Length: 423
Image (tube, rainbow, N blue to C red; front, side, top):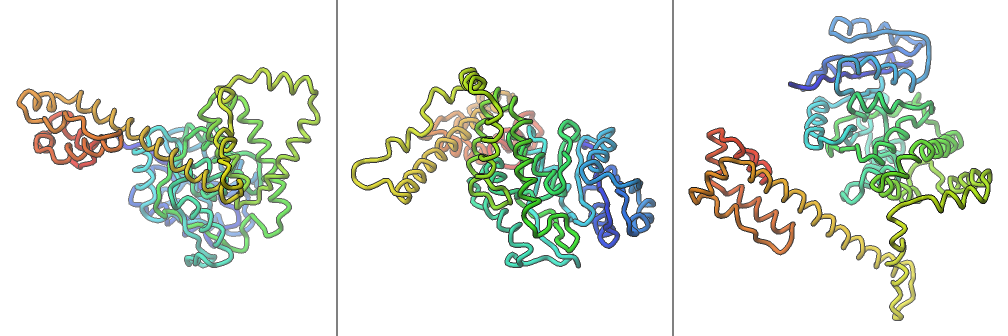
């Protein structure tokens, strides 16, 4: 049974854009089950523009202005009553026609994730795509490009900048959205939500462009930096406070938090990482020395068992000074080594899944008795990556598995899929 999907749209003074937004929802290849719109006290003709859409099943209501985060949370509460997934769309943005289809495919391939996001392109007030070098679009394309090499986790990528960019790029499980409501920020209520989801390893990314983000004269963020800088500082202090308990008790979340924090020092957003440290110093000034001593002494974590900078501490070989270039080269070599270890670890996991699928399959068991699965029983390869590649190749080439899949034999198709071949 297909999960139910609701699209929720907060509207404020977007009479010129809301029609396009709604059309982009109603013209999806995978139709939503509900489309719910709240007009947040618009002073223009937004409600009148939406009136004809009621005949097409759009649920439209209006009330006094309560702000974007309150309106989104209210919409989520309505949608969560009977829908498992919720897609948020701001009333000036547009979806591409395959967005829901692609998001559900990404969710199916990442069953443990609660937040799905895609790449986006920037459009102007007339709906035309803006070029990558257009000054108003350059930041959005630039922050997306940071992850093009595939070497950044969502946590590290978000630390460098909010590449997800907008609540319009949030497609999420209803229960997760209800449990993690958007907070009362003017500019960046999406950033707090997304950073927390990254700490919890809840984000999966569809690499295709499936959202059109509109930049126009009435966007919330202005060119004056101070309000946004202050809100970024406040948001991060709120973030630290909110997740302190989870970080204390979960090493995996701490690792992703470290990735985020390290990336912050090279962020493309309006976060002043140095000023954040200054504000943390102000908070520490209000705590006694005894309290600080007790906090450090009472914090238990496996990180205390390993010197944090042991690689750099022993990097000097007496041959060349430890210049920035030398350290960078050594770090690159370390990253390459670490990447290889992570690849091996992932391959062992996939290998275990494939072998477990084969072990469950009665068709494979029958083939073994008949002498038809010899290639599937080999354990060739120097490491997990090579072993997995060879076993997948054997599965894809196995006439016995293909015959079983064609006959509908239980387990044969699963082994082909794990092996990287279709049924």
